[in-house]
Image (tube, rainbow, N blue to C red):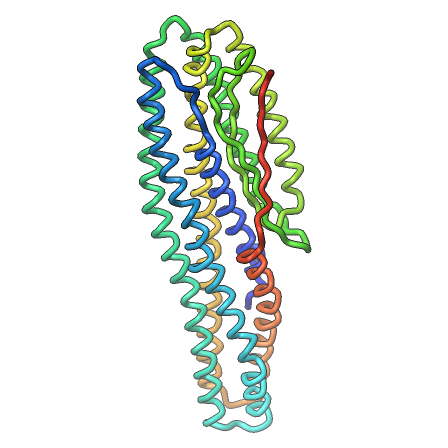
Length: 353
């Protein structure tokens, strides 16, 4: 039945966390900015960034729609059909427990087959979403590779500030690693009883403020969080600490070089998007496995009912179906909140003035 070790409530929450994280990471790239420069590197880097921004705007606008249609709406529809069919199917079971009747058995099997077909559509919906995500992800991977290549080319030409570039690139790598570690924990944060959707938008802003600064940002989006808020706060503190180190290494450089030494920071956004896609793949694979097991369970129940002759056979099948309906009565309201609930958005801006 539904109440397994990897239950539907948990997996739907995890999947929604993952898509919100991706959307927030996308928005982080949209809000990224490079201060205009007359140097030759600026136009090339700006073009690479704009390409990534166009891609993430596309997914920011359509990705949630796809997720709602292919996954959340299908889950809601399936659950509502189970709940709507409950009384009729339970009545059929009760009648068969009292006295076997081939006509009633046929009606029961037909009803259960109809419900099984809706479960199978859940698996198909996830596959459809994954196909769309993969096609978009291939474009983003290409944009990420181009950005890395361009940044590397620009920085390799700056031999006179190589030590600063190497030092800051090392810090940026540490930031990316910390973001990935913390986001893994945030994505799997346990649900609160009162579920809501929140996201924190953090981006990359390469601007030489007074004293010199680069804002290192990534996107975080979570649904139904309990302990995630503390992890987000901890990540914010870690980024601020890294930011202080970058500021120190930038302090003696001119404005143009302050941007050059932090250009690798632009790849944090695209890398985080690709990393979030891996989280979605993991979450959806778990959900697909769950639906496949559930479909197999239903088929086994249908097969047993087809051969059933004793009251005990119908009693066992009825207990399974009743437990499934009770679980759906929790899943449907949760999925409705995740689908229709407003998203609370906050921004983190890190700077040194």
